Length: 394
Image 1 (cartoon, rainbow, N blue to C red):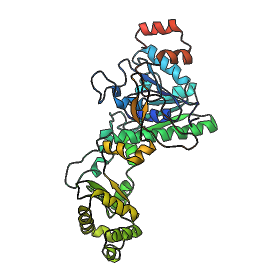
Image 2 (cartoon, rainbow, N blue to C red; image 1 turned 30 degrees about the horizontal axis):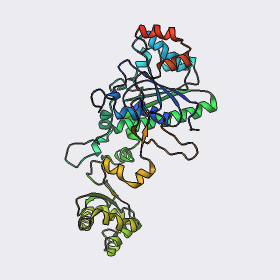
Image 3 (cartoon, rainbow, N blue to C red; image 1 turned 135 degrees about the horizontal axis):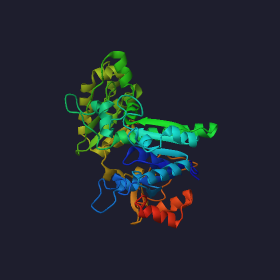
Image 4 (cartoon, one colour; image 1 turned 90 degrees about the vertical axis):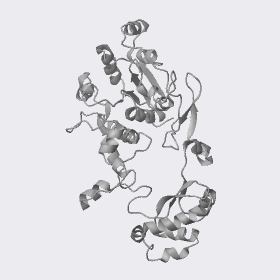
């Protein structure tokens, strides 16, 4: 048993935010029916060798049923509306107004199917003066202030080599869907869940907006540190590796000082409290960096771990796959596909009584078209053949 067994999700849209939300729901038992255009979700080809299906798609499409329906055709939209009526959740990430233009306005769907949960993921949200602007994760990260906080003071804003805005928005969408399903189960009433990539970014900015409102100033980039907390930084070891050391609580700093062989630092008035340490952060970083530079990485980790000081190696993906803890936790697994087993990352969270699981990797394009149309809409082989001949399904 999984937590979302019995929940059916109709997923519309392509690429990252909406489909990643669908992958999390599917991992935990929801039957996710993904409607794809005849050319397939663009994610199938991103970072893929020519003629191959990307591993990104294999992960994001896990446990989903791929149904090819051309929503650009009226007959295709009619099929989508029928499938929505057979679903608990409609998940989409088109530009606002797209569903309405296709005759799938949420108010109309909810009038016919009042228990339906409609999750809408977009760059700017469904309302407001910029709602109809394109909204990619890169734009959301910039406009919502994340990029301003990344990099070094005086340098250009940088980005993580990831689609963070999409991933955070997907998590917000999953939270919204689960809350709405809880309400639906209690009242019988569905609702619209409005997720904006920009607002999803706001949820990870901790107190930066409140600080700006209260002080009239904006927090800026801080390189390898974080504003207002010390010490927490990255340091280079004698064998040329990078390691993160955090000793930013008062008692924690005392343990760090003893591990450095400098217990007197804990009583030094320059370092006694966090505000003191922040005021003298450069000096403190020099002291820690000097100690780390005289030790190999494993020695630093062993010494600080024994002292109960948070410490972590800066790892690349290959190193992660070799780390025994991550191996034991199953950070990567293999999932069956039409071309054989493929690697996919695990999706959290881990539930003790109803854990999620990956049953199959992102499937071939249209692999479940016939099965879904027959099972849910009662379309026999002749009806499906007519739709296929007309280019409506594939």
